[in-house]
Image (cartoon, rainbow, N blue to C red; front, side, top):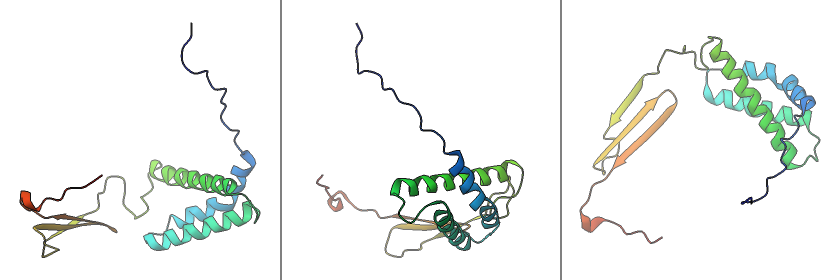
Amino acid sequence: EETGKPLWDWQSPEKADTLIAKVAAAAEADLRAAYALRQKQARQQRLKEIAAKVESECLTPDADPDARQHVSNLLFDLEAKIVRNQILSGEPRIDGRDTRTVRPISIRTGVLPRTHGSALFTRGETQAIVVSTLGTARDEQIIDA
């Protein structure tokens, strides 16, 4: 006697080869040029422009949200493929480093004067702040959930 729920008759959706080719033709050269830009904000702005261009070329103005999401996913996959292939072929990373170079990190402590401890970590264009404040058991706060 079998137990459990019946198996689904699920099949993966068919690949839209024509749409994949259309997105690649509309975006691949522009994406390669965009990923040659070293400044992050300029690169992100260019990627947004490319996405808008691809949507206008590959979709009709009255396209449903699912179609827009599908084109967006195809563009994301193409971006990942381009960046991955550049790194695997030994080309420098987007910011010009090779695969063995680590960006230097800068650490500033005591950034916030009213806390017991704080530090600002900066590596490239990425920052993280860490804050610590100490107190007694009377200072604890009960959270009602």
